[in-house]
Amino acid sequence: MARAGHAGTVKRVSGKRTVTEDSDDEAGGPWDRRLHIVTGKGGTGKTTMAGALAVALATGGRRILLTEVEGRQQIAQLFDTPPLPYQERKVASAPGGGEVFALAIDADEALLEYLEMFYNLRRAGKALSKIGAVDFATTVAPGVRDVLLTGKVKEAVNRPDATRPGGLAYDAVVLDAPPTGRISRFLNVTAEVAGLAKMGPIRAQADSVMAVLRPERAAVHLVTLLEEMPVQETVDGVAELTRVGLPLGGVIVNMARSPLLKASQSRLARRGELDREELAAGIKEAGLEPTRDLVDALAWEAAQHADRVVLETAERAEIAALGRPVYEMPLVADGVDVGTIYRFAEMLRAQQMVG
Image: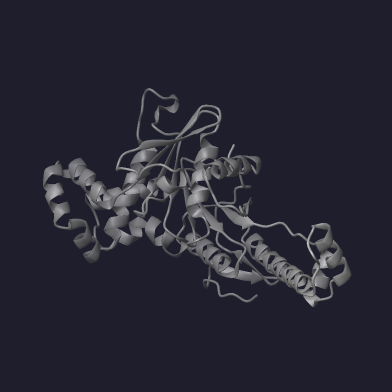
């Protein structure tokens, strides 16, 4: 299927896209990074995958911080806990004695910390917060909010703790990041504030964030579904992240389904040529009356499934053409709960996304 890429960033080779700029060409895992950034189109399950990745990383006795920045309290919902305050709180234990802490980063609270850190103005900052200083600042200079949010993530990545092995408070940080449509702008904070501050604390904060976003320290993982729009957004996201020089990780395909028909049966189903007597026999074996309407409905469902398998095969080819490691999580028919997070964490480890 024809899709538009970013000029100079993506080219088509034998009907597929491939990234032309140099990127993180690591073979694909385990991803040993201090910061894991998880993004994806809305509805792809990026928060679920961020939670599963945090548990996977914590397995074996490590301490991981899972963060969110969109003010939606999705981590609390995912782990079935009360809404997160602006402080780190344990939300899960991992096999082998690991721990997952969580933090919902709030821009107003981050501003107060920033003012206290650089200007010793926390009390004055509270007054500014009451009158909407962050909203005012971000209206005038939209990049400021992202500097505050990413600055808090950077602080967690680098926070010292002499009581722990390695001397850091957390072994790794997982960020449930904004969607792919704005991820490069959110992370590329130096460019965002370059026109606002050539020097001083704001510019220093932005530069320190970019220092964390080096390929050896961070990776941006993209979550997608085997559907046209999410895959298109993933293709565009990879191209844009590559263009601005941000470190690419893997692609997580969520809600993947296994084909239920053999290839020969799938071809017959798409043409509407499945053996009706065989369908009727199968219905009867299931203890149902094989009426004509039921046989027709089953044939229609088989055709729909066969069509979807063809679509998913094409989308898998698009994802493979990106040249990134790919990890697959299955569709969970009865919804995601905490048990699902642990199951997905095991699968990410089995697929060697993390060690």
